[in-house]
Image 1 (cartoon, rainbow, N blue to C red):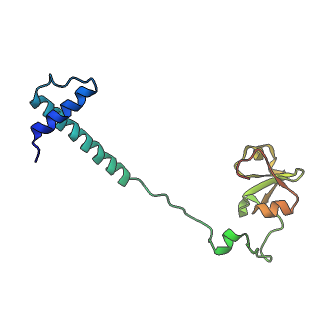
Image 2 (image 1 turned 45 degrees about the vertical axis):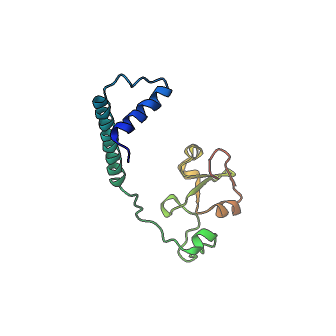
Image 3 (image 1 turned 90 degrees about the horizontal axis):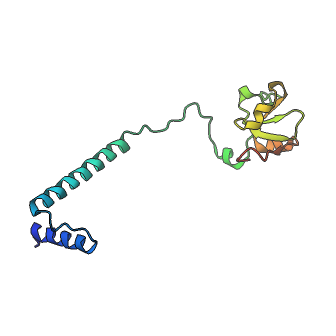
Length: 142
């Protein structure tokens, strides 16, 4: 079993190889310095673990119902209650101009240039493309 004295000499010997002269520091002071550094490290890790545990989880509220058809693109529309054109109020995620040929996400900068009265809202990319619109090159993600 090795003693603290042997470990101290081993550490000091290692530092001599790397041009740090710790041989001039008394052993008691060196041991105290090591204890203080370990204490600071333990305190920092404790604080870090507390920060990780106190993060508030993300919550999604008022989410539409998700089914297997949501991801397959086989969404069936209710033809009796569906309006002729999607509007901003009923959840159109894509926007096109009545006189244009491009469609955008609602948060893209190109949408700001379209007057509210000229906007057409689409629920999906397939719906926009079937109406003759193509994705905008300036809107990332299309």
